[in-house]
Length: 449
Image (cartoon, rainbow, N blue to C red; front, side):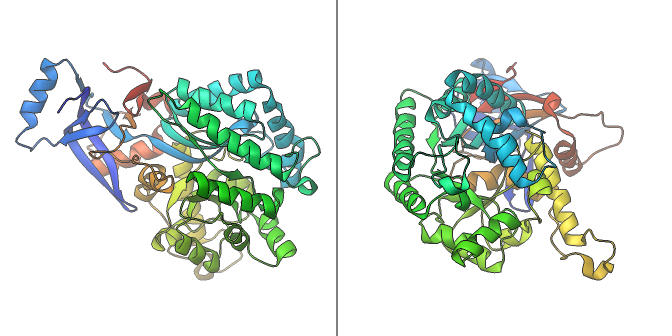
């Protein structure tokens, strides 16, 4: 078997939603398809043979003692055109946030030159933070969306990108909505075909994604048409569902049904759909998600500002609902999935214990909702891969070689175990500690020495 690179070092990889495996001083062998072709553990009889051959072929890369190999992170919810507004107006009311900050900015992405500058910076920043795969909301205008595809190709990031649909003029600003339902569907199909053409000759393939912004901004006719396009081209679907009180109330007030029901009735709640936020999903909704195989993009940072409540992640996982993590740029203030997974753990603790000290302690929280660093890491890696139906997010034979090499932030003043080192990596790592990032075996950040 031919290998292009053999990485000698210790690695962590999720094996379930609550268990992380550690393997010390292993040989992770990459093939020319950008996959992990073979993993040889140090107690394997072939270990020395593979090691010697890698040295002879000059393809051995040995990590330092304080470096560890992790899967590349997966961000399941990013609004790409909102990047220039990162960390801005987070405490404003939702209507003000959309109409005075977000929509005016997104409208600028009809300018391809402007989009090019923004997206190059965004994609490189996410790569620098260890994020190798991103599910992106684009803008209304395909001129900007094409630039996002180009930026992902340039910086070796796997991008799943959607032309946003907003075909309900009654709920959108005059200057920022699709001209008609027909044009929204036609532009969506055009973008699907454009991405297919842009993939020709590319090692890392991009994906077009069906993207109704949310129920409020779309007509039912438009949503049904998008559902048909998703089926025609066998594509992923992304939208929002029950993010906050306003969004939840819209479906009830206008259709006397749950947000999830309306998505289901229009053909958008499928086993290839990823719905963002879901802080107000009730038992009926979660059961419907379970039946349809629909996944959730958990965005704990932005939910702290705009989400009204905390998504019961543990409950969703117990129902076998796939859950990934999303930074929700720029509803969130931070492009790092490391920061996002930390917030996921903290939010779950607050949900479990409660936050209102005027309520008696035994009645304050919901109880048994905490997730650990293990689960948060799973959401950032294997869980995200499952939501996107991708063979990545784990360090296993046959998976894409989407990897990050990180080093310890602080010296070890006392002896650590593999698990305490893992916790430190999860809670301490910044861009400064991410040394190398590979997407499908291609170097996206740093240098292989």
